Structure formats: structure tokens, C-alpha cells
Length: 436
Ligand code: ADP
Ligand code: ZN
Image 1 (cartoon, rainbow, N blue to C red):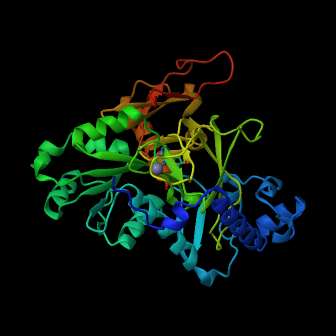
Image 2 (cartoon, helix red, strand yellow; image 1 turned 135 degrees about the horizontal axis):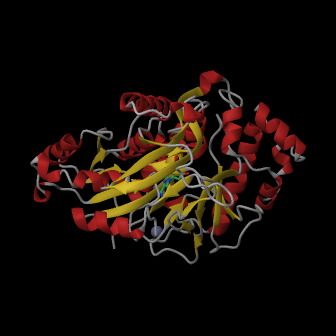
């Protein structure tokens, strides 16, 4: 079996070795965190005024959780732990309205982050001989650039294709001899349908691996991608708060994603009680990033639901694995890779005076892509037979949603009282996509 490591010593370290590194790095992160207005207040309240208050990994539990809203409230620089001139990179999370969640990296943070994405690529069997076509969106989003750097660091030829322009994707794959692509699973399925139109046939490609992530997907979706293209597809998990891709990645055995535990401390907690759960039980993943001097984030509630896979992996890495993400403990929707909170949609449509009180968001599959429809009741005053007025209103709502959220939903208008009203808690979202 062909197993390669990027950093053999740390990748094959035993538990004691990993935990030793974790404690050492956690103490450094606490020192940096204490330099920020946000954490100094939080940590002082919890009785932590220096790294000396962290004696063991068990002391992590003294540290309060951090949530997405904390990042928003600290916008733009409230969580910065180094002078601004030391920042070399920033990213912002996709699809959020109003105040974005921004992260900052120093030069050493960026090197550490790049090392992890290189390690991730290597653990799937990637080598410098590979040609890597990155079909993830570039820009503020971490998905594109962060893995780009990792692949480049390994010495692969990287094609920064970004998403979109489907027909050209196949042409580039053929012309440049692409062996690995990185994309969302829905995009890979979507473009497959266009291969015929592009004039390129599967036999003309050297395509052999795909890294798929950024959105929930089932094992069946993976198998479908693998059989349609005749490749191996590896699950990749990350979130911008934790540097994006390179948090957890599947190795050649494709049996759960190794969380790089020298770089992240993971906890699985009950999302209601926030108490830790034993290995193997499903709960919310909480992550502490261990090398982010510019902007430490301690005990971040990812809201992603998963479990630790018991036992060790055949690849020899003792970094524990998590199962594919089952869902979220909040109501965040991921629409073709863009994060959308129903509350954002509500905020936009309720500012439109012609809109009535009830609305419903429906998410479904249209072919391989996600389709979102916003159904809203209109106010009584808007009841009219003039279809032009209704058309204009629909376009106005759609435009407002597009402007604030980078998604472009279908809009349906309904007469007052026509949308279903639930008996108990209002049901605002119907998600007809199946994950499992
Ligand atoms: P990124 O920019 O890396 O996509 P975001 O912060 O925009 O990061 O989105 C991160 C979220 O995307 C995660 O919290 C998770 O809900 C989802 N996600 C990322 N990768 C996967 C994956 N492999 N499987 C399921 N969900 C994923
Ligand atoms: Zn493995």
C-alpha cells in the first residue's frame, strides 16, 4: 500500500505526543487571546489571566465557548491579537448579510494553515506530479485560496479555475491533464450533465481524484460522483472560522475524516446542555484552533453535528476521525455552498411594505443543484388583478435578496391567508433535500 505522509512525525504521533503539542500550543493561544479586548474580558471572568492558569488539557473546559455572533460583534478588529501590520491575509464567511465574520492570519498562521492543506492533499495520495484544478470559488471565501496554497506548496501544478464556466472546466481538464479537482459535490454532479455539450469525453481526461466539501452530502452522493467519473472522491471539512479547508480530511481509506489534532482541539458536546459527550456519540463539534496568533478562536461552536469514529485508521495516523457531517444544530441552510440563515431572508422580505405576515422558504433539488423558493403572502392592499404590479413586486423582492445574500431565489406571491399556518412553532423552512 502506498502511504505517504507530509509530516510523518506529527501525523503518526501517539496520543501522548499529540496531547503534549496541544497543551503547549493552547497555552500560547491563550496568551494571544488575552491581548484581545474580546477574550481578555471573557477569560478574566473565567479566572484565566495568563497561560499559567492552563495546567492541563482538562483546563480547556474553564474557557467559555465562542459563537459566530461573537465574531460579528467584534467586527472588524475586536478579536485581533497582533498589530494590524502583522496581518497578511483576511477571509470572510460566505453568504452572510449585514456584518460578516472575518478572520485574520499572520504570516506564521498562514504557513501553519498551508502546511495543513498540504498534509490533507498528501493523505489522499496526492503528489507533486498531480495537476490540480481548483473549482471552488475564489475570493473572500476560504474554500478556493486556502487549498490552492496547500496544493501549490506540495509542488502540484495548480489551475485556479474557480467555479462557473462549466464548458471551459472540461476543456481545461483535457488540455492541461488535470488529475485532481476540488469542488462542492453538487457542482461536480451538475457539471457532469454538461460534459457532452463541452465536446470532451471521459476517456480524454486523466481525472482520478476529487476533494469534495463545503456542504453536507451523503455517502450515496460520493458513490454517485465516483461512479460517474470513475474516480475516488474524498470528503473535506472546514469552516472559515477555523481557516477553511484543512481542518479534517479523508485519507486514502475514505473511512471518516482525520481531524488534524496537533492543530485543532476537538470536543463533541451535547448541543442543548453543552456537556461533553463520550467518543462515538453524535453531538456538536467544538473546535479550538491551535495556531492562529493574529486571531485566536477558542472553543468555537461549529454547530455541525457529527461523531468521533472509534478505533484507529489503517493509514497509521492516530489523529481521530469524525463521521460525515449529519446536519446542524442551528437552522443554517447551505444553498449551493453559500450559507444562508432563514432569519436573513425574513429580515429582507419583512422590510418590503407590500409583503404580508406569513412566508415559507422551500429548498429542493433542481437537477443536481439546490433551488430555493421564497413564498410570501402579500398584504391586502396589494391585492390586484394587474399582473404587471405583481411581476414588479416579485422582481423587487428577488433583487433585494440577491443584493444582500448572493443567492437568487425564486419568489412566489400568495394571497393573504393562503400559506399554511402551523399549530405550534411556525414552520418557516421546508428542506426537501435528503442528506441520508
Ligand atoms: P467555507 O468557506 O470553508 O465553506 P464557511 O464558513 O462558509 O466555510 O462554511 C462552513 C460550513 O460548511 C461548515 O460549518 C459546515 O456546516 C459546512 N461544511 C463544510 N465542509 C463540509 C463537509 N465536508 N460536509 C458537510 N458540511 C460541510
Ligand atoms: Zn487514515
